[in-house]
Length: 155
Image (tube, rainbow, N blue to C red; front, side):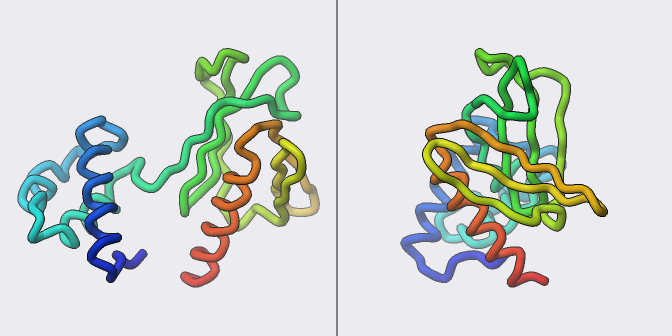
């Protein structure tokens, strides 16, 4: 992914990345020296290039919500440019061990309406529609739109 050419936007992304690093939102193992070397206002673009390679960067994590795939529990949805992850969790949001990861190539359809976001995973000849009841349905839809568009540009 290309770094933004707009200096104001770059400054905002840089500041957010610095704050995210301070909050340990993603892993920096093996990149500490490079990050420290480039963590200056004059090297924002280089810093952002390093940050983009850190595991956990550019992942949107949604609050837990009911899912039709789990009878007695909720899920936490995470989306990134590489994959969609569904983490099983309790109704109070405590993560459980079960995680399902799906590459974007398996998503054949998605949509939303009235507090429900859904997407379809297609594997071979079988399709599995997954529905999430959440007040964040519109933002989920926007994330799917943006990631689908970005991934289509890189194909």
